[in-house]
Length: 360
Image (tube, rainbow, N blue to C red):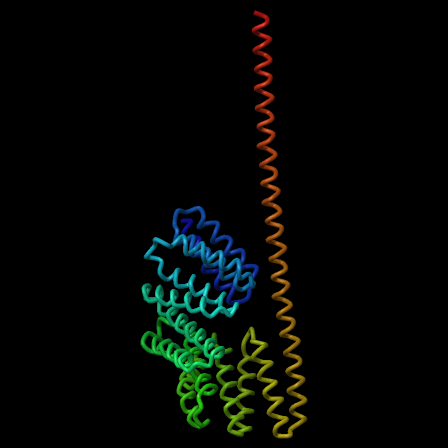
C-alpha cells in the first residue's frame, strides 16, 4: 500500500545519503513524501519528512531541516506509538543546532531524543543521543572551562559504551567504534595524568574497537582512524618506527577500500611527512608530500563531484518548480476560460429568452 511504499523509499533515501548519491536520495525522499501524502497515516508522513530533513541536512539547507522536523513533530504530537521517529527527528534538530553552535538548543533537543529513544527502547538512537549529550557538554567545557561539563561529557560517552556492551546486536558497530575513539581521545587530550597512564586508559577502548573493526569491512575508515590515533601516541612517546608503521597501516587500509576517505588519507600522509622530517629522512618526506598532494587533488575532485550533484539537483528542483508553476498557470487560465464561457452562455441564453419573449 501507499504507506508501505513511503517507508520503503524513506529507507532507500538513507542508504543513498550514506553513499553520497544525493540525486537519488532526493528522488527517493520525494517519492516517500508523495506516497505518504496519499495516506491518512501521520507516522508515515512524519517518517517521509524525516527523510526529507536528512537530505536537506546533507545539502546544508538547515532552515529547511528545521521546517521538516517541526512539521513531522506536529504530525506526531498525539502519537505515542512513533517514539523512534520522534527520537530521530529531535536528533536531527540537535544536529542542526550543533552546526549553528547553539549549545542550549542542542541540549534541549538531544535530551528529547534521549527521552523518546528510551520510550521506544531503540538502543541505536539511544547511544547516538548519549554521544550527542557528550558533544554538547564538551562544547560547553571548551567555552566555559568548567570541570563539571568535562565530567558530564565523559559520563555520557561511557553510558553509550556500556549500552553497546549490554546489547551489541542492537547498536551499529560504527557507532560503538566512534564512541570508543571519543573516550580514548578524552583520556589522551583532556586528562592531566602522565602519558603512560593516559595511554593505558585510552587503549582499553581502542584495542577492543580495533579488534571489532578488523572483522568488519564496512568500518575501514574508523579502523584507519584508530591506527592514526595510536600513531600520534607513538610520536608523543618518541617511538618513531612504531608511529611510522601505524600511519602506513592507516594508509594501507584506506587503499584497500572501494571508496577511500581521501580526507583521512591526506591526514595520514601529512603525519608521515612530519614524522620523516623529525627523523631527518627528507627523501621520504618529499615522497610522502607528493602522495599527500595527489590525495588532495582527489579530495578536490570528489568535492567537485558532490558540488556538481548539488547543482544538478538544484537545476532539477528549479525545473520541477517551473513545471508546477506552468501547470498552475495553465489551470488558472482554463478556469478563467471556463468562467468566460459560462458568462457568454448565460448572456446568450438571456438574449435568446428576450428574443423569444418579444416574438410572443
